[in-house]
Length: 408
Image (cartoon, rainbow, N blue to C red; front, side, top):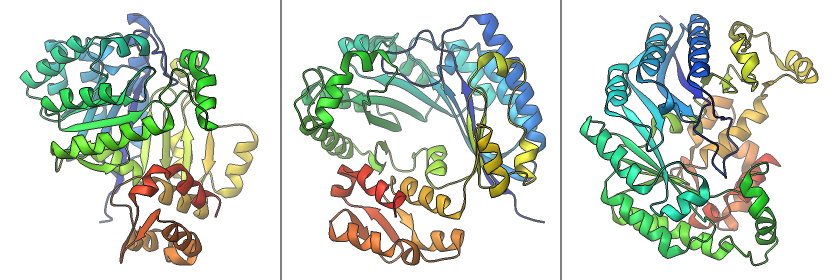
């Protein structure tokens, strides 16, 4: 019998109480009636797409948003029951649900347990309520503490906490305080990202010119300087590692054995299927995504998975689709190599030479030898017998390193 192929599932819940000031994700406020209509359509999509995935074994499920914890507990249970019925879940599959502090209740957490959810991701960002208010978060630090404590009492023993540095008005001392307070709670995983000022957000209106000034080497008025941002990044590793957290990816830290399997799968090109509004997928060398229009999605507009898996989108066919402005892209061998390099190099352990050759039928030196040597001489890459990884200097300029592989 042919071995089952690996697959990860991402399920998007696009609803939130209100958009945060920095957020450019596909999310929106809505009422309970819209929640119900959305879940109904999502259950239909899960059932339909699962029919075409019988040859896949699901290693992980990630329910993200938006704020999935805004749904009623029974709705989350219905979603996971549909997943368990429609897909072949690995017995020890990692199943994560994103939550916002202040939206959790004991009843919801009990439903999550019944649904098989075994990992929670709590969006804190900062322990300073001033920064939370500026970010537009709906919660306070006390709300977070209450939610975290409630989750522990319900015996959730795999919790991630999201944090954000380089905020307007934030100092290195502020950031150190946040890191130390959070590690006192001993979550199993910490994601620590630096603020990116995205176009189309209130933050871009307020701080866009400041961001441009910083990018051009000037001194920003309200955002931390590049030097200050770098200090915060280095501080993150120093503080977290002294408290037992290992950096396994540029912005992610975990206690030993508690790395996020879903994210590792993404960084190592494990095929993934996105379900829900605007969600992206990568299967059989094809990248595709659902519509971002809520009304269209509620009317049943999502990608026909059978066409993808039956090879309807080979390179020539995909080009014709692209000319029609559809969100379906066939990645050729060279593009897949590029993805392998710039995603895999995000991880501390880097990439495997053997896996590169196994996936693409050529050695990594035959494709990127000159780039590897150039970056090694610049002190940005370390080349070992079977692995290629970023140095600390390489991490500091990781975007430059990634672009080298995209432009090779």
